[in-house]
Amino acid sequence: MDFNDTPTEAAFRTEVRKFIQSEAPKPQKGQTATEALMGNWQANQEWFKKLGSKGWIAPAWPKEYGGAGMTTVEQFIFNEEMALNKAPRPMHMIIGLGMAGPTLIVHGTDEQKQKFLPGMLAGNDIWCQGYSEPESGSDLASLKTRAVRDGDDYVINGQKIWTTLAHMANYMILLTRTDPDAPKHRGITYFILDMKTPGVEVRPLYNLGNSHEFNEVFFDNVRIPKDNVIGEENRGWYAAVTTLDFERSSIGSATGMKQHVEELLEYAKAHADDPTSTLRTNPMLRYELADRMIETEVARMLSYRVASMQNRGLIPNYEASSLKLFSTELNQRIAKSAMHILGLYGQLHGDAAPGKGRWLSTFLRSAAYTIEGGTSEIQRNIIAQRGLSLPRD
Ligand SMILES: Cc1cc2nc3c(=O)[nH]c(=O)nc-3n(C[C@H](O)[C@H](O)[C@H](O)COP(=O)(O)OP(=O)(O)OC[C@H]3O[C@@H](n4cnc5c(N)ncnc54)[C@H](O)[C@@H]3O)c2cc1C
Image (cartoon, rainbow, N blue to C red; front, side, top):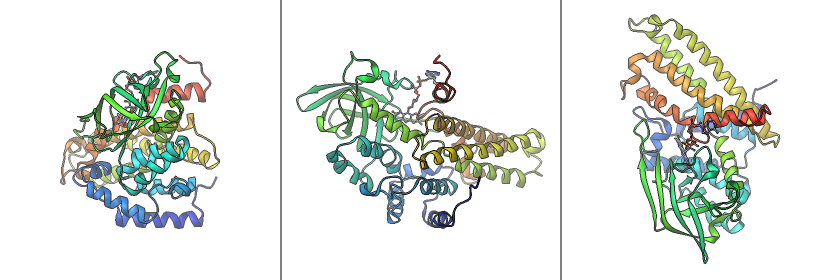
């Protein structure tokens, strides 16, 4: 099997790589690439405009909706180069262009597409995702936030939690319960909410690394016009699942991981003769590095499988779950190996720390990837039932 790029693909890869290496914003002082943009709106907007100048704002969208209309292979190359070169994705790309826009393209009316897609592409709007609630995460269909029809509006009361970017967003994709008596998947309605509507309150939540990425959002008699329903009343679950498919296919990119392991390897070699080198005190770390290197190859093959299915017009299901599960858990193992190899230096912040302290941020953030977009246990359930045809537990 030949995994090499064709000449055309190789030329595209070189173009993307050169552009990213010269133009992408560089994270500072132990930040991950995403944190670098989250704390710097100007840098986010500049990077967004630069990607726009190449037509790479919405690589996967069809051209008729303002996207780049890239083939699956081109998207894969684009994503691979973004990850390999540690280029952050502008915040617009995460939920707006990456999840809400593609869902609107599939399930929205023409009016809704005309109203909401241009703002995403122009970089005017940030979107957030109002799915999880305090009692409804893995069992998302049990959500309780209530929407009641009142004339041309729906009135919303309830609460969401873990809402990434709600503190910056102008719009939310929102799941609500419109029929409490129907079976749980059949009483859900999917809305677009303007975050400036009276009655919406956003309260910050800080993650393990003391970074403000997500929030709680409360709704107190919030009115949403009926024109903002995506799909039909009580049939929001179908659109909700479409959004999750787009979300899961973007989490857990395998690409940057090999580079992380290579960086660790370089560090270990450069410090092998130090009197405090962990390699000297713990020879088993050599095995750990060997294992991590093999595992990155496995993750890469799993991601090729997903991309090649998409290329043939198939929808990866348990295959996407296998990739998400393996690569997010591998991300944790790599972060742990980094802590083992760096020893106490791994706990340092700031410019003088190895990797400017980035390893600490990576370690602290690594738990979250195995939770967001569906936990590892939920992915294992999907693989057991749909991949291995085992009965439900
Ligand atoms: C960084 C981050 C960002 C997030 N951003 C958003 C966002 O923008 N919008 C949004 O709506 N949500 C967001 N979430 C929430 C995320 O989707 C949920 O945390 C996730 O779905 C798990 O739900 P939960 O936290 O309620 O845990 P629970 O569902 O309560 O699960 C608790 C534990 O029980 C296990 N478990 C639950 N059910 C089963 C089962 N059937 N079989 C086996 N084990 C099970 C889980 O695996 C987990 O270990 C985010 C989460 C994180 C960590």
